[in-house]
Length: 290
Image 1 (cartoon, rainbow, N blue to C red):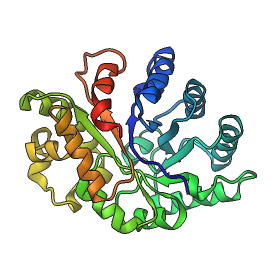
Image 2 (cartoon, one colour):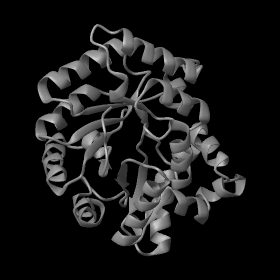
Image 3 (cartoon, one colour):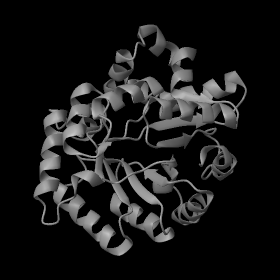
Image 4 (spheres, rainbow, N blue to C red):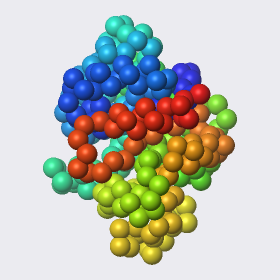
């Protein structure tokens, strides 16, 4: 099984931002000591983006967080993975997710159905491909108990997004002692509570409209009052680590104490900020990179 540790970077900008800037940033992030680059998948050529980051680096893991299974066939995914391994060595981890009904059905009403069975069928396709994608080189974006069980049975582990350290503990229990638990953590280098929570609410507003995330947070003890008016302070603070470098390190340590093998951070900045958050990545590296 692939072993991923340390701290990684989760960044939509590395996928959908300026390609030249992403290439330069990837090399610097590797030199700073981050252990993985995670990129999302909301449309477009995911495999081209993975290839670009692999070419720009020499040893860091490039991970999909996540590959949207409605947007790719298992055969094409397995073939792309095999090509990456041949060209760049064992540096790719394929995070796979079933996405969310409001997003998938917006383009094709009724397409999103049976998420657990659809995920299992996608994994079946990866196993049956001409060049199978090994189960120990893939993880699932699993939140609830049934998807976590599927991750335990059929993959190397789980990459939960938009979660708390309490969920990391739930995931570790479900995955078992040997599987990978690789949560994403939103962070904001902002010491002022009002400004930090404003950044958090701007980021979280999209996710509070998606039932998968809301249902998972309800399982963790949050209620209607927490989702009202853009999110309660309690909920925002639980999902977004803010403050100085040490405060953010403390949150990462909570995930690790709860059973995380690796944590990838998503740096939040003001929506008017242009480009990648290079300054924040540099500022955090000394306290987050072991």
